[in-house]
Image (cartoon, rainbow, N blue to C red):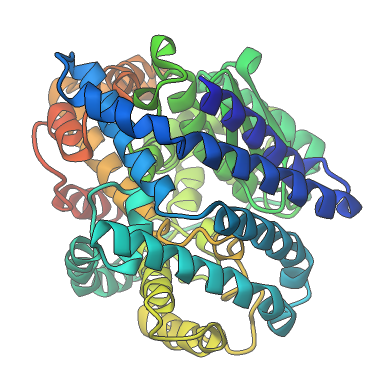
Length: 481
């Protein structure tokens, strides 16, 4: 429980740094967070743990206890591969780089960003080498294993390689189909106070427990906190309510997972979500599978009329066309679900080469421009703000995370395929405002399982088969063609 309590404190400190903390507090906060990370590292590397784990191996354990042992052993090995000095230094460097990134992105200041980013990359490579030396994995695999235990770059190459074969043609076909479809654009402005009220109403409709969480604003939307106190953020633009609304629904999916993890397992390793891909499958189940469906937009339309005033754009059919419009764009978090995988493939290919030492930080803009042109046909030369500076992940050294987004989209498509096989009336129930079949399925098969099973076992138990990317492609073709 000590680590759980320390993690609770660290999470709230991080949330405050990204939402409420005044700018001049960053240096002191970074030092405090780095010290806390060092303290947690000491607990994780306590020599007595090794003997305790060894003894536990020979004991008669239940499935849950065996899962706890598996997760503790993984955490212990990961921690013991790294010196405390590196853990602390990386925390400090990440906090400094991330804080500066907020203003550097707005200023299109790639050169300024590089000053801090080079140190983040250096420390991340050192971390990756130590983890790789200990585990026998490649350096990038060693980092990715933290987010997707058991998944390797070879798996991602195979999955993404297949997607790259059919995605460009699908984007072209969908855009051709949508070209002549009528679309009425919403007329703003949409005041932030009204957007926030709308977001809160949708969160309530989706079952968010406001006695165990809250919604705030940040430079980059995220979900933090702990299961008993989930902290969500979104960001607002008064000329576009969709960005904030869809971001809020996305984070609500994360929150429902956290709020429904088994309470009897809190504080135990088995009580955490199994992987980031599984976690992203929940946010994308809410944002993509559910919220962009025609059934859901029928429910959303009257809520928009209530909060922003009636206008033709809020007709349910038009709203559905708006939320499923496929457009090649610069910004990942605003991308539609058809073009979104291209954004992830681009980042994965760059960050893998960066960690393996095949490229240097200075090489990123040219590679970004090349891959954006190849994958989406867009020119990002000189546009760092909407290019390689747009995401927060690299600034704090979160290398290996990006594949989780597309894995999550694939899991989400597979979950809904399984739901429809067990509940043929699922879509009719959603159209009537009854989300019970979807939420009960997710709770029984994903939320309540936490880390009891490894990922392949969890996926098979939930859906009856291993991860099958064909469900994702079928979902996109069905919805968009």
